[in-house]
Length: 333
Length: 294
Image (tube, rainbow over all chains, first blue to last red; front, side, top):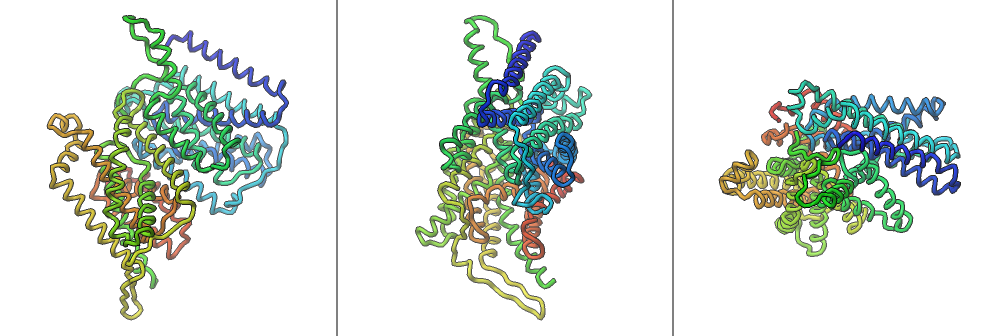
């Protein structure tokens, strides 16, 4: 894809960000602002999930661990040590990055599928640790002093998610780092033969995924003022991020955003009208994952791009080039 | 220390059941190169089916094992073509997608089980569950519960049956050929689709049957699935991926850890201990306890 069209897409993203920045200035409805803030959080989570899943080819089912580490570190430092919020937030990100190094070092030696279950098991172990420890408040969770300013949290969340998007765009689509990760995803041995260090690259990718996730977790903790092991470290955080990425389109930056917006709209409507059928939500999540894998292997974004390509392509014309990040990969290392 | 021999014995008899789960799990991986995230959910569904069949027909769960096997083997045989379609796709990363597919299945099964069977935990009643043998010599004594002994015997029988199936039947020859080289096996006349579907059926049936046994020895609940997925994975990684001969030792170790925690320490820490061990082993020797894995 020519760099011109990439730049146009970046301009589009900047315009969307600017428009989102103006929303609280014209809109004063607190409920709607709350919904938008949470939507922004999920977009950020889906984006950071895609760093490992889409670009590196490793499914991290322990994504919630980073979110929880960020949330708990921020909450503990603010409540027990009385640190100011921005400092506590940064400390949470540092803690999650250190955690990513510690978790990644042994688990990234496992091949694809085994890595997925290892991270999943580890996230459950961390959740159990938070449940049985006393300094985290155990199953009762932790309360933070409330700061009732919905606009403030909207802007902070927008800054984190927007920063994540543009940072990832630069690192993964512009800088050689994204290409290196894709090389490792396609064929680890060949990447090694080219002089790349796959283990080091994968570790970097894991830290890159952990940083924004922990920031989002910290903001989430201060925003909702109450955290417990199941809301921050639970499976549902990783599960929903996975649904958004798979449904939207893996290995791109627009795909997760699209998936997050659609799935979050569905989630909001579901909890507004069908909250009596709580269990139904997991069934639907599972069904969306399974069905989109079978019928939309490139996600909704890939489906739209392919439709547009076949429509534009006149009979007998040259086959159009593949979209960004949708190049076929024949085998997994 | 009077309880130590008892804890070890209970652990060994429980670990025998885990051997079956891990062997079926690695069989599917060997042939299709997909790890089934839903393994714990197959166990859970099997256990619930066994529970409801027993309370409905009043037949002993051990006699119902073949019925559960046939039911779930059929279900697995019907679901496998979808999975096959995902992993033989040409876009994206098919094997990763296969994993995501089984993850979706596991979420769906868990949600369905919570809807249909509720949140309570049950135990499957069996004629064996009350009886036990008691040995004593001085201070040293041991209780062998009949139901755990039956589990040990079951594990032996199923392992022998699977061994016979793989090593001495034409079907098993096809399975081993597929695991070695898919294209070459196809050229020799092994039907990839049908063999993969059959081995998946054997796996789902065996897992569900083992679920019934776990239900009689321990308990059944809609939330039990993930724990057994982690156990199955733990055994396979500990044994060394792709090294079937290491499975029994790893499974017995897991059973012993579990029962020792139950007797001496807080059972709430079992999962933490299991993970800590797994972490250390991956750090020191990523190819498993025997350094024979891939």
